[in-house]
Image (cartoon, rainbow, N blue to C red; front, side):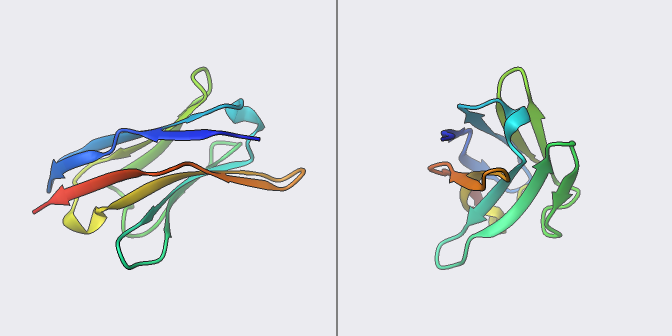
Amino acid sequence: QVHLVESGGGLVQAGGSLRLSCATSRSIGSISVMAWYRQAPGKQRELVATVTGIDSTNYADYVKGRFTISRDFAKSTMYLQMNSLKPEDTAVYYCNARIFTPWAEYWGQGTQVTVSS
């Protein structure tokens, strides 16, 4: 079992920055893939960024160059640095963890990010 707790959301003006955190109850080194997803009102949940156990990162096109995913192994925490925020980035952001053997997937409770124009 892995517990994930997000924090760092809030209200920010367009062009501003926020850093989201995802604290895990398990060593990050034992988690195969960690990711950030987001869900805007009336829309499906969508992938924002992923980071694997070997520190390979991937980003959705709509955040590439603006968002950075990272991990702190000592703190068992994953981060999402969000710069140059746009109103369309407004959503609830969720932390996700996947373990391949045996397969398991976990979600955090989400943190609200609101970007005003």
